[in-house]
Image (tube, rainbow, N blue to C red; front, side):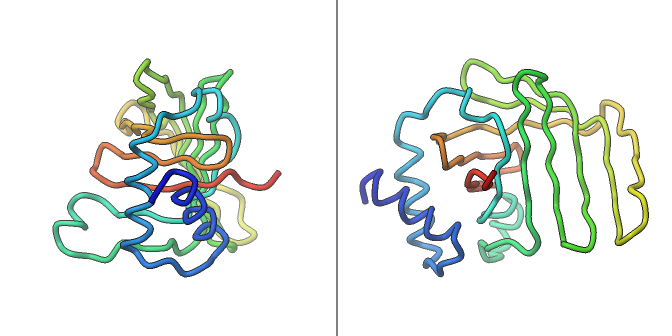
Length: 163
């Protein structure tokens, strides 16, 4: 599968089309072998449509999956700020904090704050200090598709969110 076909498979999956997990994983692997675009393409909002789960989940043989709820990442590159949000429609959980981008397209982050909102209630904000740290390795990036591997062994595929 070439890069153009692989990218098309991911875009179809992001639109909700059923794609066999093996085909999706092959498309991701093919794109990860391609050169990525500039890190400036990170700016903005991304919606996750597929994840492999953590390395531990993979060891247990848990299936790779389409996501329940909506996971979004918002990169504000000028401010070096990252927000990751899990939105269920009736509430959300959002972690946010500063990040730095290394020369090898590794995103090192520290989530400084957690916000939890349930229904009509106001969001509860919880400071996290310096404990919630991690990294994400960008393995493929273009104007519409973002693939990353996390420090816990998982792979996630994102599509740029509609403006």
